[in-house]
Length: 211
Ligand code: MN
Image 1 (spheres, helix red, strand yellow):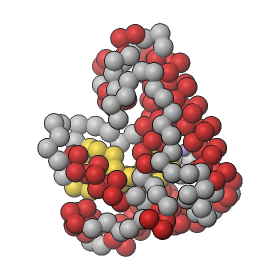
Image 2 (tube, rainbow, N blue to C red; image 1 turned 135 degrees about the vertical axis):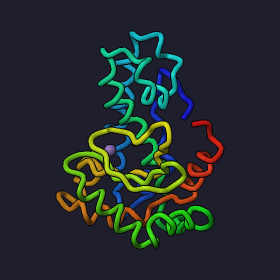
Image 3 (cartoon, protein in one colour; image 1 turned 90 degrees about the horizontal axis):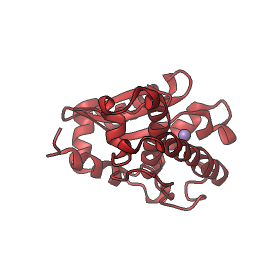
Image 4 (cartoon, rainbow, N blue to C red; image 1 turned 180 degrees about the vertical axis):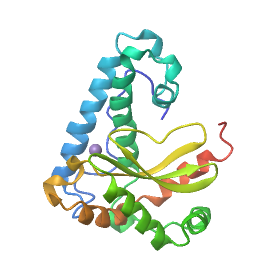
């Protein structure tokens, strides 16, 4: 994600109905065209007066707090985080019929960190279900190991030794049109949509990266 101001609305990498029946076209259309679009608009509006921030990437804006004036910090945290998290969430999914379980180094790291793939699913589900209110369940890479996290609102697990790999969005707008209060059904179904090839690519990028 090397884009700088003005940020643009990244198109979905699949059609609106590609994730049905787990995520309906209507849900995806609202989620991408309304919710993500609003985060992009608000981020650009907040950054507009701050010319010194226009050459910074989204990751820099979110991880270099000393260079961001206090007057725009909250707007960047909320809206910049909203852009970052949603881009990753949409990229990390694909049609269920094209999704294949992780293999190779990623599978080995999952087994090492969690004991088995089933335990990983259980732990990420638990994080997603126990995130009180809006937020995300996360798979992250931390000092060369995989970890599960939960984060509120649009907070991003991004930092010196930590790289976000896979978010499950549990804001109500991600599932309410179809699942209403049944967050558990949405999360359980969501696992069949994971684009493990993309997650593996993110993990590869962390190797040898300057941190
Ligand atoms: Mn969302």
